[in-house]
Image (cartoon, rainbow, N blue to C red):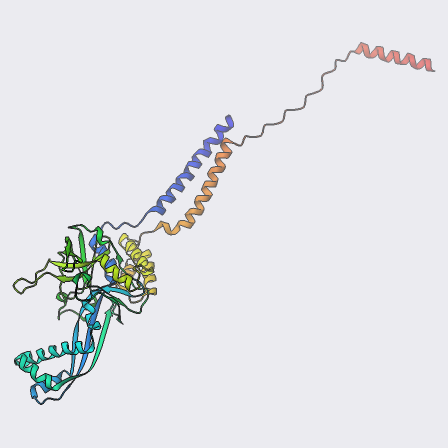
Length: 439
C-alpha cells in the first residue's frame, strides 16, 4: 500500500486541476450575452420595425375637358388635366418571399372598376374646384359633368419598405369592405430575404395585456421633417381594452387603447413576444366631430390567418430574422465584434435592411471595447477537455489499478560442505595402496 500513497500524493491533485479546467471551460462556453439593461419595448421596436411597411394605393385619372369656363379651364390646365385619387396605410411582412398583410380598405382602390374610380375622382375634382374658387358644389358638378370625360385610369399599388425600396404590389386575397371584422388583404411583392413578423394566437389574449401598435400614422407626418423620415414607422404602447366585441355581422374584433390615426390602418398589433395578434382596422366614433384617441379596434390575427391561407402564403421567419436578432443580442450584451459579424451577414443577404447599416457603423466604433465570447473557442475547448479527460482516466488507472513490479528472489546458495582433513588423508592412503597392487 506504500506505493498507492506515493502515487496518490501527486496524481490526485493533478486530476483535480484537470477536472477544474474542464469545468471552467464549460462555464466559459456557457456564458450568454446579457441585455437586461435594454427595455422590453426597445427590444420589440428594434426587432419588429424592419418588417412594417407603408402601402400606397391610388389611381391616376386623365381628363378631357371641352368647356369654356375660364376658371375651370385654368384649374384643369394647372393640374395638367389629371387627378390622383387614393390613400395610404400600413402593413406587415409575414414571409421572406414578400407576402404582406394589411386591411382590405387600404387596398380597396385596386379592386375597383375604372368607372367607379373615375366617378370618385370626378367628385373629388369638382370639390377641389368649388373650394378653390368658392363656387357652389352642385353648380360646378352640373357644369363639369357636361364637358368632362375621363380618358384613362391607371391603378397603382405600391409597397414602400422601411429601407426605401418601392415595390409593385398585387392583391392575393381580399376580405372586402362590408364587414370590418374581415377587413383583411394579403399583398404580394417580388422580393426575397425580407425581414418578417411572426403570428401569435389571438385566442390567447387577455384584457389589459400589453400591446404595441406599429405603423405610419398621418399624425406623425410634418412639413418640418426630412423626406427620409417618412420611412420611419411609429410604435405606440397600450393595452387590450376588450376582447369579446363583435361587428354587426358577428365577426370578432379587439379593442385597444394605443394611440393611432389615419395611416395606421393595416399596421400590426404585437404582444410582448413580438408576435402579431391583430391588424388595426377602424377607430371609435367621433365626439362632437372630433376624433377621440384610446378607442381603436383590430382584426384578430386568427381571422387574418384565414386570408393568408387563401393566398397560399405561409408565415415563417427567414435567415435575415435569425441573424439580425442574434446581432442585436450580441450588441446589447457588449459583444460588438460578434454583433458586427451578424450584421454584416444580414447586409450581404439583404442590403436594403432599414436598420443594419446603422448597427454596422455602431458596432465598428465599439469593436475595440468588445467582450470576448468564449463559445467562439468551443472547438479548442472540446479538444483540450478530451485530452484532459484521458489524462484523468490514465492517472486514476495508474494510481489504483496498475501495481509496481516485484523484484525476483535471489537463487539459493549451495549448502556448505564440511571438509575433514583426517578423512582426506585416509582416502589418499587407500588410493596409493591400490595403485601398488596394480603394479
